[in-house]
Image (cartoon, rainbow, N blue to C red; front, side, top):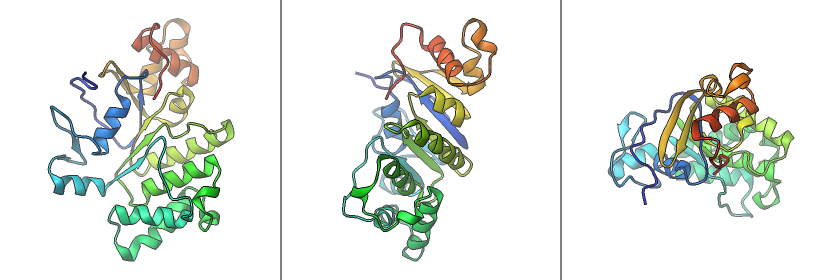
Length: 241
């Protein structure tokens, strides 16, 4: 079974959405970009160089941050210990780890909770800690897999602002099935279907694919969804992880 077939995708500074139905290949693409998986055919180039060989993979991993949809942690670690451990894993120099940990916690507004244990965090705070560990190494590329899943509406609004801020610092690739998040956060979008990229363009260009009156309306969740459905076909499944 082929998960991705002749995919060509470029990820620029700013925030790019990956949209597609279940089984479209989004998770496989993220795993390739994170170097967790290698392609059976073709090449993956990240941050200006093809990924191949242990030395190159190590160099790339030091410049990439990843937030999986669900991630493991030691419940008795404090938030600060969790983020500093991620800094150690990504080869942040010892002399800078404490400073980078504080800066990452400040970015996600968790400074006050640095000494709280991970097992005591709410869902929203846990996602913020996850983003902090993803950016503690000042990555050039940040990969987010369904970053707002499980959050209530108020928490999602806060996360949109945080993710948009990340896009001003790094190239951010965000897999999501929430059209509202795409409309508020993303600059560009890739639509995947059956392992192929069926659309690449700005959010406005995707909305322009919407049929009838929806095509000319303001960019928002409903018009993003209408444009997406026009690309994949109205019989397609809802976009998902």
